[in-house]
Image 1 (cartoon, rainbow, N blue to C red):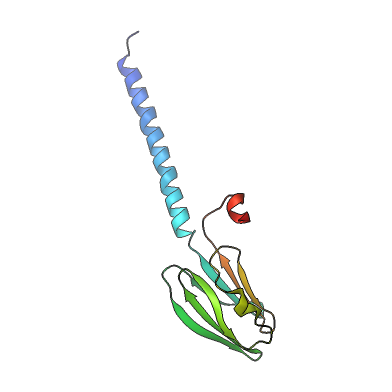
Image 2: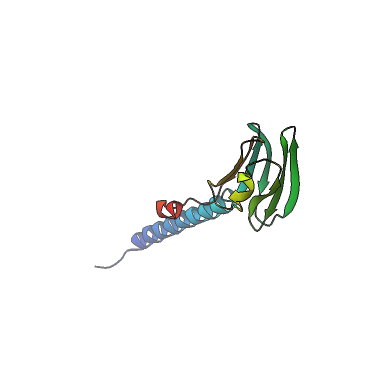
Length: 129
């Protein structure tokens, strides 16, 4: 059986369409995972958003002071931690460095909540580890 000129044109069209769709899929995945996948720390004080910090390539130290007390925050190495606080239990300081989506630091006496958000979608095995 001989391939006709019209059959070649249809084959080339289907192949180009397939390549264009695959390219669009991979470009979309690249931008979704890199733009929307960046980790950020959401800091809330007394239930209100105090600050959002994108964690990649960011280093900063700052203090959150309220009428309840203070928390010294350190953002570094793609994560965040409470370095020092004047609360009695020190749970926020003992929590240490966090850098994975879903992790959090809580200081109940000062009504401080720090959560890590964003990141790429993980398999269930990645989350449970």
